[in-house]
Each structure stands twice: as C-alpha cells, then as structure tokens.
Image (cartoon, rainbow, N blue to C red; front, side, top):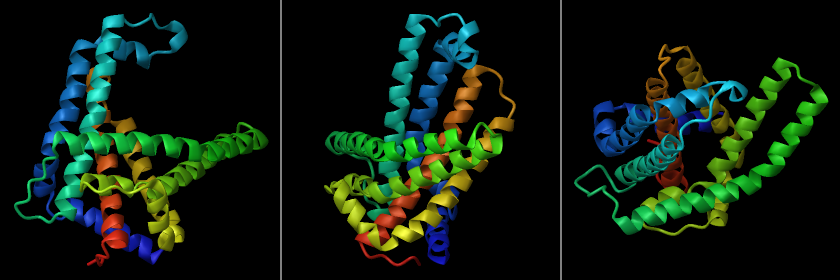
Length: 255
C-alpha cells in the first residue's frame, strides 16, 4: 500500500503542483472537449433531453440531432486522446521547450493503439463481467450487495487497464509497445496496482458524487459538467499511466 500511495501521490503532484502549467499544457484538448459538449448542448438539446427521460415515455429524438450528438461524441473522444498525448509528452519528454503537439501520424497511431487496447480490454474484462453477474444473481437484489459487486468490478477493470495501458504513453512518444509488453512491464507491481486501482476507484466515486449533487438541470449544461468531470477523471488516470511508464519502462525514481 505504501508503494501504491507513493505512485498515486506522485501522479497527483505532477498535476496539481503547478495547476496553471497543467492547464496550459492540456488547454487545446480542454477547449476541444468542452467545445464539442457546448455544440451538442446548443444544436442537439432535444436529443439530450430525450436521453435523460425514461425510454418508454420519451419521444424519439430528431435524427439530425442524433447525428450531431454522434459527431460531437467522436470529437470529444478525440479531444480526450489529445489531452492524454499532450500530458504524456509534457512529462516524459521534459518540461522544456519541446514541441508537445503531435503530428497527424502520431495522433492517428495513438488513437489506433487506443482502439486496439479498448478491444483487448473488452475481451479480457468479459470473464470479470460474467463473474460479477453470476455473483449478483447469487446474492439477490440487495442494494448493498449490488453496490459492493459494482465496486469490486470497477477495481478489477481499473487494475486490468493499468496492466495493459502502458502502450499509450509509449505511443505518445512515437514508440511501439505491445499489450503483452505492457503486461510484462507492470508485472513487478502487479500486487501494488490492486491498491492503486482502489485509490483510483475512490477518486472516480467521489467525482461522481460531486457531479450528481451539482445543480444543472439543463441537458446542455449537464453535458458540459459531465465532460469536465470526465476530463478530470481521465487526466488523473493518464497521469498515473505516465508515472508508471516513467518508473517501470524508463527507470525513473518517484522523487
């Protein structure tokens, strides 16, 4: 647990030691993601509202607005990818005058690696999901049991992601790392990553609670708030991957 805390603290310190610098580094991605959310809120408000209602009672959203939502969603995902690349490169290439902006080829390679990784994680997570479903059936519909099962599944998914996702900081640097190589690189910290996954799950849960109690009822404003929360969650996870890559692959100390 001590090593997990050290890794977690190091990742957070990189983000929040100089928050203005962090914002400057990822600002293009933040504007991209929040801009996509704003466009969706303005041009597809009816579709967002319909999605928030009970499906049986909601009128089908306009097709053109659904297309706008899909386009904005894809744009937002690409914005998240840009945020990850910028942060990986800022930390791993040094804080000097290095040009952090990825070229089209590197950006495309990163997105492709993320797609492949997502597919691999989906396949690897299927047994976890099936086990949780079976366990849920055995324990009944008790809210406490379902909550506990959900938390356990979330931690397991995060652990799996931490084991497999070092391919992403490698891709941000223009290197090629296979999923198997990521698994092997994280093997020395396999046990520690369980504790780290718990810490990340706690952060995600707290951010989710904060988002749920904040007031925006307008679908567009709610989407922008959710996008901001997801940016924070994603940035914490990206910083954790950057820390692991620097420590396990490049041999950096957690100073």
